[in-house]
Length: 471
Image 1 (tube, one colour):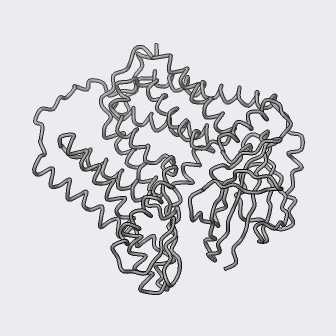
Image 2 (cartoon, one colour; image 1 turned 180 degrees about the vertical axis):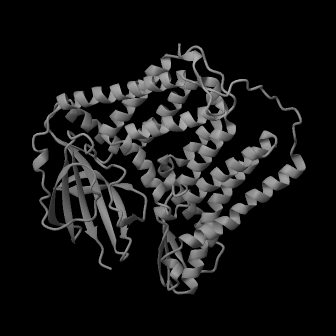
Image 3 (spheres, one colour; image 1 turned 120 degrees about the vertical axis):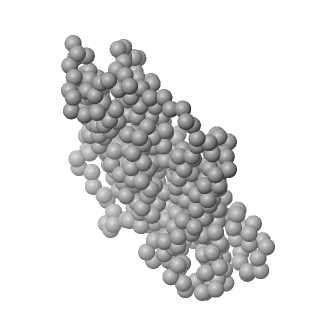
């Protein structure tokens, strides 16, 4: 009966994108921690997703720009209800186990499935570009950071093999007579690659060109984004060498990098302009569908109500099961046993912490033991990907080494760190323990969590040895 009632307040072609954005807002309200994880990444303008707000603005613009006239579908694909439930369950499982990237992708796929369910496949295809373009704002790109650090190091090493500068390069350390320059994760160049890639994709969309030339524009944007960082690092080495490491650019070079990027990436604009003049085509044939209905079909509302009820019922069931799964025993009385503040590790999760002074390789070090509890909703995470506090920067990619701990050889993770403020170096060795098992692999550690959730009394432990280098 709802199909017969119309409201004539708005032009109908704007209603689907408005509802798509309302759906996203509803999902974000239902999944606030995941939504805020996006915002937290986008707010860090000097990191890999500082362009997130710009991407989201383009997505909103293109949702309205590419929305075609929508014809109400008479039959809904109820199989998508199952998909909605599965994606929501995947989000909650990921949230319970602290796998943030799976949470973020689950939110994205819940949104896509909701649009598909309400408007159908035809409309989903019509707005496919902004939906795919949103992938540039999802924080999975950080997983390629190590690759870009290595790529930059190889490129710089190759360039300076033809130079007469007195420098020594090993791993991602560049030693000069006046000091050491480190190609840290923040210098990987992944930010320039992402922005160059995104801008090239958007530029190619606007041009009436054959597909092979659009692909050329996109590849050029990707390559120029990578080259920008190579030029930036090479330039910093020359600046550091000539100024004996006293230049202000050695401490703050974000603006310098973005200035270089704007110059280099302008090549995409010139290329697109050249290809448009030489190979561009125009189409004089435009198909227009007569829009005889400017009203809002109220069956949209029924679909949205069903969508919200589905998501809410999954949350309610999840919360009931979690309460019955395991009742926290000592969670409310957890205290940090160390006498002084230990700023190395992030404070995510629910844990007990102990610190002991030890000697490792004839150095005074600290042994830190954190015991995590996974029974409190919202705090049941072990920060596998956010282990280190923001006061520290990782200066070399994580490696695995053999370490003698309590006269027992074991494989552990090794990280070289440097404090952001006073530039002090330190080395971190860490691993995970559950009962009598030890592992340096975070994915195997996830399996330990499953055993705990199924009823085991053993708890996950993060153990690390932290050795500060005298500077």
